[in-house]
Length: 93
Image 1 (cartoon, rainbow, N blue to C red):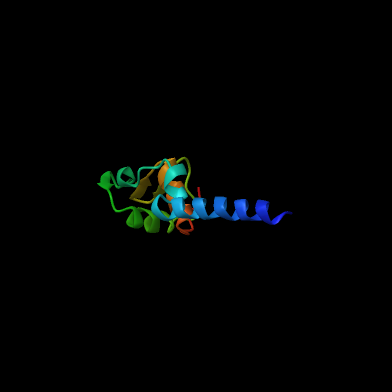
Image 2 (image 1 turned 90 degrees about the horizontal axis):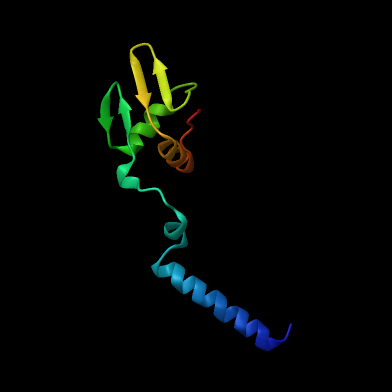
Protein backbone atom coordinates (compact mmCIF):
# COMPACT_ATOMS: atom_id res chain seq x y z
CA UNK A 1 0.00 0.00 0.00
CA UNK A 2 1.36 3.36 -0.93
CA UNK A 3 1.89 5.98 1.71
CA UNK A 4 -0.62 8.28 -0.03
CA UNK A 5 -3.39 5.67 0.22
CA UNK A 6 -2.55 5.01 3.84
CA UNK A 7 -2.78 8.73 4.67
CA UNK A 8 -6.17 8.98 2.93
CA UNK A 9 -7.35 5.99 4.94
CA UNK A 10 -6.19 7.66 8.17
CA UNK A 11 -8.00 10.89 7.26
CA UNK A 12 -11.26 8.97 6.62
CA UNK A 13 -10.92 7.18 9.97
CA UNK A 14 -10.23 10.50 11.72
CA UNK A 15 -13.34 12.07 10.17
CA UNK A 16 -15.51 9.12 11.24
CA UNK A 17 -14.14 9.31 14.79
CA UNK A 18 -14.75 13.07 14.91
CA UNK A 19 -18.35 12.61 13.79
CA UNK A 20 -18.78 9.84 16.36
CA UNK A 21 -17.48 12.17 19.07
CA UNK A 22 -20.30 14.71 18.56
CA UNK A 23 -23.03 12.44 17.13
CA UNK A 24 -22.53 8.89 18.45
CA UNK A 25 -23.23 6.29 15.82
CA UNK A 26 -25.27 4.30 18.34
CA UNK A 27 -27.78 7.16 18.54
CA UNK A 28 -28.05 7.38 14.77
CA UNK A 29 -28.96 3.72 14.29
CA UNK A 30 -30.97 3.24 17.52
CA UNK A 31 -34.66 3.91 16.84
CA UNK A 32 -36.04 3.16 20.31
CA UNK A 33 -37.37 6.14 22.24
CA UNK A 34 -36.27 5.40 25.80
CA UNK A 35 -38.65 8.02 27.23
CA UNK A 36 -41.62 5.89 26.10
CA UNK A 37 -40.41 2.61 27.60
CA UNK A 38 -42.14 1.19 30.62
CA UNK A 39 -44.21 -1.70 31.85
CA UNK A 40 -47.39 -2.46 33.71
CA UNK A 41 -47.02 -4.11 37.10
CA UNK A 42 -50.35 -5.40 38.45
CA UNK A 43 -52.17 -2.99 36.08
CA UNK A 44 -50.16 0.01 37.35
CA UNK A 45 -48.10 1.83 34.72
CA UNK A 46 -44.43 2.10 35.68
CA UNK A 47 -42.06 4.43 33.78
CA UNK A 48 -38.91 3.41 35.67
CA UNK A 49 -37.32 1.13 33.10
CA UNK A 50 -34.72 -0.25 35.51
CA UNK A 51 -37.46 -1.27 37.94
CA UNK A 52 -39.31 -3.02 35.10
CA UNK A 53 -36.17 -4.89 34.05
CA UNK A 54 -35.28 -5.98 37.57
CA UNK A 55 -38.83 -7.17 38.26
CA UNK A 56 -39.01 -9.11 34.97
CA UNK A 57 -35.67 -10.76 35.76
CA UNK A 58 -37.18 -12.31 38.89
CA UNK A 59 -39.46 -14.58 36.84
CA UNK A 60 -38.18 -17.94 35.64
CA UNK A 61 -40.10 -17.62 32.37
CA UNK A 62 -42.42 -15.21 30.61
CA UNK A 63 -44.55 -15.60 27.50
CA UNK A 64 -45.34 -12.91 24.92
CA UNK A 65 -44.35 -10.02 27.17
CA UNK A 66 -46.47 -11.30 30.07
CA UNK A 67 -44.86 -12.48 33.29
CA UNK A 68 -47.38 -14.08 35.66
CA UNK A 69 -47.15 -15.49 39.13
CA UNK A 70 -49.81 -15.94 41.78
CA UNK A 71 -51.30 -12.46 42.15
CA UNK A 72 -48.37 -10.70 40.50
CA UNK A 73 -48.04 -9.94 36.78
CA UNK A 74 -45.94 -7.72 34.54
CA UNK A 75 -46.84 -6.64 31.02
CA UNK A 76 -44.22 -5.22 28.66
CA UNK A 77 -43.43 -4.98 24.95
CA UNK A 78 -40.56 -6.10 22.70
CA UNK A 79 -38.70 -2.77 22.94
CA UNK A 80 -38.66 -3.05 26.72
CA UNK A 81 -37.34 -6.60 26.49
CA UNK A 82 -34.59 -5.59 24.05
CA UNK A 83 -33.57 -2.74 26.34
CA UNK A 84 -33.37 -5.08 29.34
CA UNK A 85 -31.31 -7.63 27.43
CA UNK A 86 -28.96 -4.91 26.15
CA UNK A 87 -28.40 -3.64 29.70
CA UNK A 88 -27.52 -7.13 30.94
CA UNK A 89 -30.66 -8.07 32.86
CA UNK A 90 -31.38 -11.81 32.80
CA UNK A 91 -34.89 -11.60 31.32
CA UNK A 92 -36.30 -14.90 30.02
CA UNK A 93 -38.98 -14.62 27.36
